[in-house]
Length: 145
Image (cartoon, rainbow, N blue to C red; front, side, top):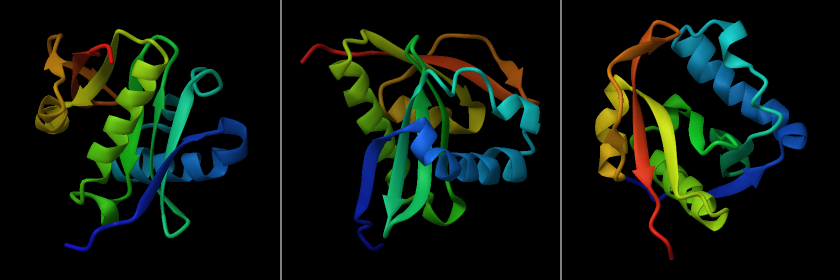
């Protein structure tokens, strides 16, 4: 497997909006059939967004809401199972720690539970559905540096 030289950075919602929207549209709306009206919400303006690029192409994204909830984490199909999601998640957790968050939460699709458990998240809810996709809430306590 080739080593992908990716860049992960904090994104600017206004400046990077087109790239962020494109990834989320491809993954959530087109691939997972999330209704468009559910994908875009009032939290995009106030969240911290993250963008992953490879050879200047936007390939993955996520956001961190002001309450510490990680969401909208998406990796384009050709770049999955290469460790990019793990690198992005570690970047977000480090950012949250630097912002003095004591914990972060997320709504994990049940198929992704093992991925998040591998990164120390634990399940903290019963099964629930968002956009007709089964989810569980997960939590990670952030250790002080």
